[in-house]
Amino acid sequence: MDRREFVEVCAVGGGSLAATLAGTAWAADAKPRSYGRVQLLDDLGKPLKATQLKPQTNYVFHYPFEATPVFLLDLGKPATPTALATRDKQAYQWPGGVGPKRSLVAFSAICAHKLVYPTKELSFISFRKGAAVNPQTPSKGNDLIHCCADHSQYDPARGAQVLSGPAEQPLCAVLIEHDAKTDGLVAVGTLGGELFDDFFKKYEMKLSLEAGPNAKQAVARSAVVRELDQFCRNPVRC
Ligand code: FES
Image 1: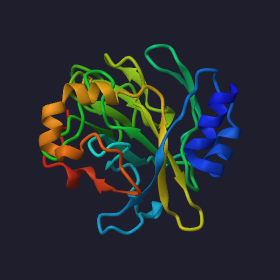
Image 2: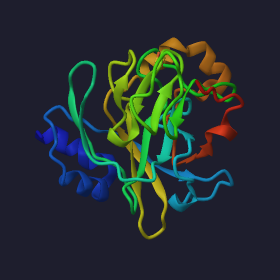
Image 3: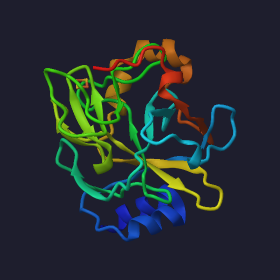
Image 4: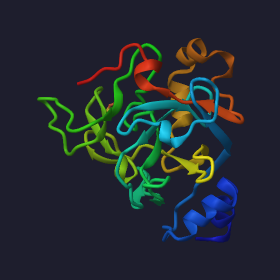
């Protein structure tokens, strides 16, 4: 890691995230990006506790921008650090899950293929407990994030690496910290192939209707976490 990257790592999450990452063998191209610390809240507006999360259930919050959705998952099993690369071949080391079981993970919910994402009306992409059932595209494993648009499958226990389908890179990781004292969760940055510029360009009109004039505004201080089935009226299963 060169000096600039080290500074970026430290800037992302202060001491605790830097301590987490210090034990990880970083690839040369790894560049975590800081977007500020955002406390995750439950749907009553109180700090979310990790123990409130149902295992293997889709939760959604928005980060780092008001209109960019993120999946938050308790996988129910440890997620170990994984070496990955973006489509332009930038290597990075996903640090794995956080929390007592290292089972808590978060990824941008924008599909790395054609930027399908969950809205309040419809979602083609989500985590599937067990094997996704689709006659055209058999599941490459259990407990994957599956995009029904063109059947890309991502493994959330391995940094959302691509297991099948046309996606050319993992879902962008959202870096989260777990506070062992309070059981709270804070989003601190991203790692991997960001697609936010493409996303805002592709959906500019749609996002202005969905999220209003603040769609591109950075989320400040806190973000509400909702179960996907409550956030979205039609979560598609394929
Ligand atoms: S948009 Fe997700 S697989 Fe094509």
